[in-house]
Image (cartoon, rainbow, N blue to C red; front, side, top):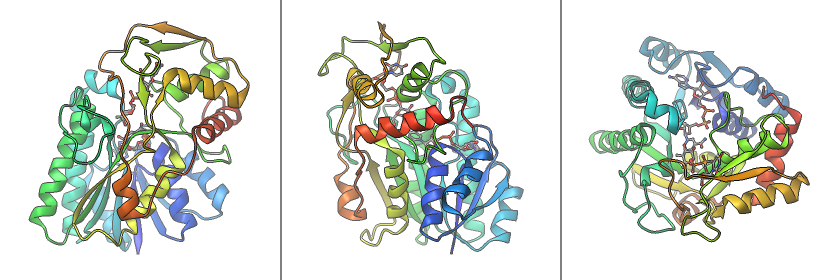
Length: 336
Ligand code: NAD
Ligand code: UFG
């Protein structure tokens, strides 16, 4: 049994590869390094003394995929590869649909050609769009996406559902991540965004380390606890464990499953700043600014289905998330 991990050199992929290796899975990673470097997987090997097989290549290249499926006894695919910036997707929609939808289709076609029937797909809470109510469970309305990135995830989810209906051998799990943050506790692997970060925690960490002058807090006039946006931040190691639980899912007898991976608790931007300051003892310089276009007020998960069927639940606290994000940033001020 070997697991193909697409995009396994990236942020969530590298942490999941670590967990897979620790659980003795044979792992083959493919990555085109468009948003990562080979260094992340070298560090994974340093942490656990095991190595995945790594092949550089693109999921859109079906001849590359064929070589991979012919070379290794792959039974399952965990599909992380894709582009993930909301703002960039508005400027480069064709690239986003090409990678996230066409790339996924080519992967599916080649999986079917080689009779590989089990797939776990990285989706996002972004498919829920503006929530009608929180917490969001898996039956909440989807599709009101406001940017090509979110729409690409929504479209691919729909494609996967249709494929699972048409092919009775397929077994597909869609994992909808809420806001992944943090790093492995060793501080050796973590999130390494290109350029100025879009996301809150990497931005705060870079202010703390002196790379950025101040954090802009995007709006303090939302109808939330303190006016700032509320999100369900989840530690990346909890997410990694969620993938192992999905891989080993024995309870569900459906062939198409969707699970929210979140903590079930929302935190505001100001609460996150305060937690970061408390844990690191570093003052974060911030300014209240206009709302960011496309942002929603609040969003958090009802993760109870994952607990019931996968036996998974997020265990790490906001303090763990802040401590581990900071440990990674401090040890790697310029990333990998
Ligand atoms: P990431 O950019 O760190 O990792 C993605 C990896 O895929 C990178 O290593 C990149 O080089 C690789 N890649 C991209 N296109 C490829 C292609 N065509 N062929 C081969 N490799 C390719 O992102 P991440 O944060 O680890 O996210 C992983 C997945 O989870 C993505 O699908 C993302 O959309 C999804 N997701 C992420 C978040 C988040 O906030 N990080 C939230 C929800 C969902
Ligand atoms: N925020 C700031 N200042 C910043 C960055 C963010 O105030 O510099 C605020 C945002 O306004 C929001 C909160 O911090 O209220 C979180 O913002 P992020 O950019 O960290 O995360 P988002 O919830 O906007 O989006 C993230 C990923 C998406 C994914 C979504 C749901 O970037 O890809 O979570 O999973 F789809």
